[in-house]
Image (cartoon, rainbow, N blue to C red; front, side, top):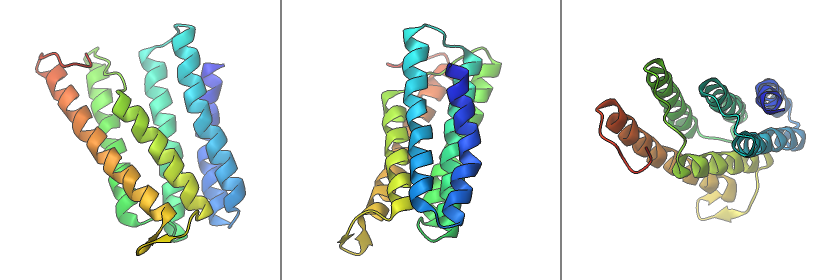
Length: 178
């Protein structure tokens, strides 16, 4: 079951991208949100059944990153997301993915923090809102663009937290999340 939800997100990524690119934003948002919801189901079941593994954790986060990246690429192409916002989010995800792989190669697993979970939720909300162009203008930007910038800010904050925890782990200092 758990591996199946990760696989669902991997399959959903190109489907979401295609749906956004052909203008089927509502269908894209539904597929995206169902796939995003499996992330929470996956984590809940893995913790409840105590079947977490380093490989499963790595694949799960990779699937999430691919889903968000595919959606952001499509949203940039249809002018629903800023290329800068997409670069900040995708750049952070690639950096953290690389650091997790480096840590795993040394036999160290750096678990997701609460900031990382909030970051993921904010990204999911911002991406879905951007697909649907949700909200009125609030000052110079529509609501969905404000949501994307909030997601970007939290993405960068969580990157700093992750880098701090990675550095503490790499240098042998323990932090509050170890």
